[in-house]
Length: 604
Image 1: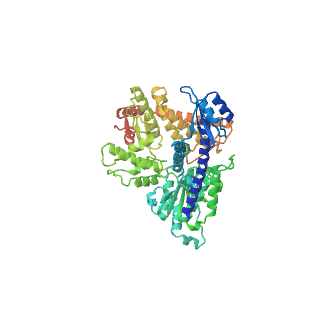
Image 2 (image 1 turned 30 degrees about the horizontal axis):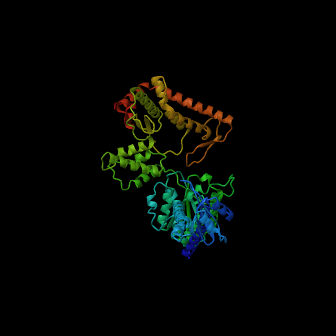
Image 3 (image 1 turned 90 degrees about the horizontal axis):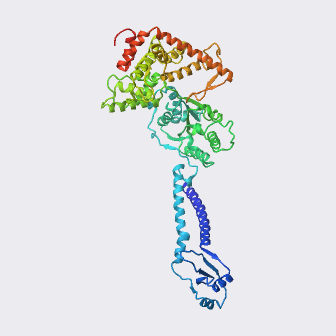
């Protein structure tokens, strides 16, 4: 039945195309004929004979073709007129010495047929094939099957992913285990009258493993898995998105139990609030998706999973109970989660003895699964580059630094004056951190990196922190401004090297005022809110211009206080500053242990 329907659709489109081509050819042929031939009256023909303007004529049953005399290289149209009963015509032609005869029955008619009809048909057919072929590639299933969904379909066990391959997201896995159990044993739930949520929305920052989790659910449940991007529903043809949604759900019902996974659903599920266009293609597609989610029976075993990192812009109708009513947070992993993720991605990688993945996990706070996978791969590539058969700890440490600051820029040669300035700048950060009991210093280097830094100081937190106090934030700002303070204390001048430190210090101080409520002036009034928390997390102002200027003044007050505090710390320890900077200039890189030995007064 499906084949017959498909054939009828193809035949219908083919018939339409043939009619259009026929009309075009008829019009073109008539136009070509008008360009080469021109009709005249019989009386004009007699006059041309008398004026001896005709070279020859060809007489047929119903018309006379007239060939005019022409000058050299001149092209003249062929004239024709109707043949009428004129007994004296031949005598006139003989008198005017004009050649005459009948139309020859030769290959001219075949040539005309080929030029006028057959050749244009082939040309148009070739053009149509090229155009339709390109549309086929873009639309997945071709112009003869508009509205067919473009989802990738994985059969049972084909995803190749289970929950064992997903680490660092234990809470998210627990939320999804219930869905797997339902797909395995639906009767256990239906017997008691329970209904499983029709849809689960995976929410989290990019790279945290939302797509991987969806594949793992299908792999664990051993059911078919439909994977499609939200942007694939919306096309240039009106109504195609809605048709694809219908087709997707029809196929899913046929292959139930199964899982439909819509990645980046915000592309099609964006809120309709304030949308001036009330009937655009995206809105039609969203309406169809809402209707389909209401219409299908979840007891048949069709589960919808969707992923987004912008939940705040999704349409409220999409999130109401009965649709995507379960929200699974897939957040950045904690210390243990990062270590588990590193272990998963380390399978198949040969490590040297003594490699500590916990140190790598500690040095990457805020990293997501994609970042950690990249670190393992970078370390393996570095080991191969250095002709080693195993990945060493130094490869992992260097990989972390490559992700944070870029590769070493060996062709950037600093002058002695610049190198000295960078050394004191970096030691200023480290010394303020050590003397304020901030996060321990892991490494100090003055080797330039490709991301623009001429050197950097790496700190590693002793443990994972979830809450930060006001004093700790002020200490962090002091550490950020320690580099500029060291330049002032040592050289009594300042440079451009502190630009990034100033930017980060300003952002942190401003957050204390506007978001954290840590100042007496504004107390606990929130004057800014975070938008797109899972993406860039940019703050949005919720205050007047007058209040904004007061916020700037309060931010400046905090920065000046911390800056002066850093200067005072370094002035009181100037000998230590000079000593550590001298050792850094000598070695170019100091480990955290070497730095602390120098701070304690021991020689390195």
